Image: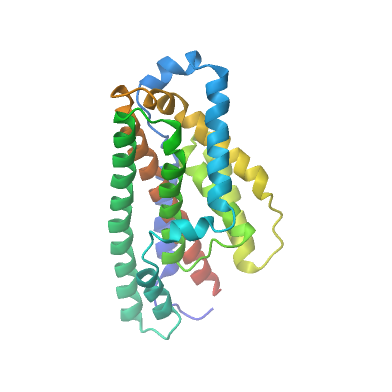
Length: 263
């Protein structure tokens, strides 16, 4: 293998250490979840799960990605990818990597703040379930921007399944997160190498809806109560931060792996 202009092997190793640290983290939720979870009626649980599934169907259905894209600076994100397509000197490549990282950090901060503000505002109004499509769109926007920043698509069924695995991995913990992380990496490598990838988009959509409804169950239930529901802002903020960090890390790792393998 020819010597790479940038040591992607070293960058990949550093990123894998960051991933190992994130793997130990869970999703911190307010204490209210522990006290209320057992008292929420089954119908409320089913309603929340159904609301997430419908939101996924809308945002992953025909035109769903286009709706989210309306809030994404596509031209700016595409600029870096056009530069990657040309011949770069080692200095230019390093500069572009730094530029991409600065852009990622600014974008991530804005997305997390937006999710927190959305949850707080709707919580103060006593709106719980209706905010789910908005909240989910913010999470997907974060993942889509990371995908575009590192030159990946989210159009195909395989790539949308990858997004769902990312979302689940970000909000899970322990062995569940490790398993989702492995599945995410395996699917990404299969896509990038052009290997056959058996995916079931509907099954992963349902799995993601169940996981999100379980993680946010008590908080979204409380968010339906005026004023007290402002706790939803803190949870949205926390969840958005997890999704943004995990998604950016996984797409960046996938990007470095492609560079190392000469893809």
